[in-house]
Length: 353
Ligand code: MRU
Image 1 (cartoon, protein in one colour):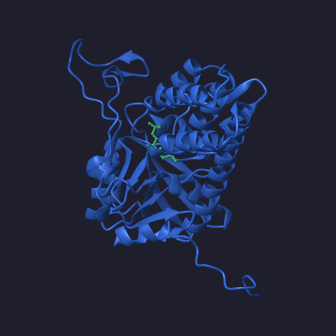
Image 2 (spheres, protein in one colour):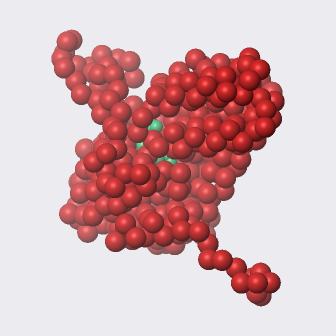
């Protein structure tokens, strides 16, 4: 599955807002189209919006008519700011935009910068694809043969460069020959679990049972779940993790019932500038997403509704964070810092063996 592609026509995406009933691809060609697609969740999931943002900036950068480098960079930064503001919680977006801006800075002139930003966006896509593949393989060892795994929202191929984080771990465990069953929460208000996770798993022939969010405690307490695994939108330096609203409640319920709770995410989701989850900005979305279900009004007209799109799970509820550089367990502060440590210097003559 290719949730995003860089083509001659622009950025080709699967419009996730129409799944699972229609598999429609859209070509995004302007800043307005890219920003709208991210804001209304046609493209979604932290790693994927990073990739979409990078491609969006590369695409819009080609259209900048500026002779001088400083005018070009000024305009590129304005576009990056507009893209960054579409979804504030997933740090992957800001991380990817900053990488593309840095690549532009390195160009000797405008033409070189325009070429460099396309190459950088493609490199981000490629690296993120490899990172999710690797972390999935590293995480698969945590899932025992015959396990039933609980997941929330959609952290699958659709949310990444094409393999998944939480669902990637499940896929990799299956590829190792393990028998795995999944319980997927529907994930109100936008139903990413019902619409996307259940669909992805069915495509792969992985047995899945769809439950409403409020059923999770029941199944955890009845010993129907062996472990829970979710993705992440931003992980602070101490391991506190922002993910789809409802994740915190699942983590607390998992702890209460003695069920391991894992987070799977690439390094691009870790924000070491934040000492704890207290500083993670939480996106507030329109109240109509709560008062309606799939555009059908369900609440009393005029009722006040709150709609935080994410919550923060304190690190003490997390059994392990799975990344492409390895798994980290408590104490997280040191373990997360070590993930970013440069590899040990090679001795003269290079590695042996
Ligand atoms: O609002 P969404 O659908 O973009 O939220 C997505 C999630 O919360 C995912 O769990 C997270 O981005 C990880 S995706 C690999």
